[in-house]
Image (cartoon, rainbow, N blue to C red; front, top):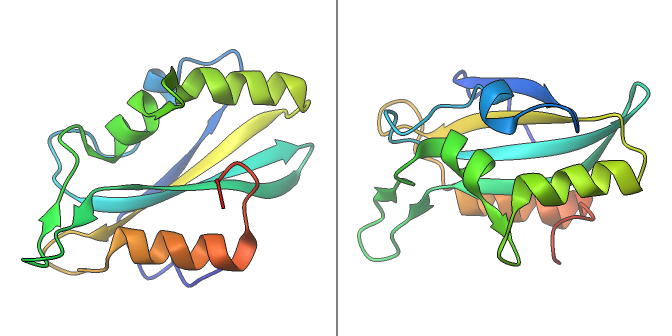
Length: 138
């Protein structure tokens, strides 16, 4: 895995088909204007498999400044969509179909305007290119 441990503002949580994603997600919300990435590992027993990588926020190509998502990393995870469907519904369906016990979701603040100014999109692309998570469209 790429060196993500340098990002000190990070966390993780477990999401099962019986959970409410908005209640278990501990990522920074709308009060924090950060850029970040999140990685989703499918857990079957104690064996993790990276299945998805996503981002929150983007770097403006003209100004090189962060354009954060208005509802933060948490909003991206909780309110994101896939093909117009709430992503949380897609995740629950995939867990049931694939007999996944839980999703372990790890998040990292990679752009905070103070300590780190890394581009979320660049990191996401590097991880996807290296690991080819199957829920990402490649």
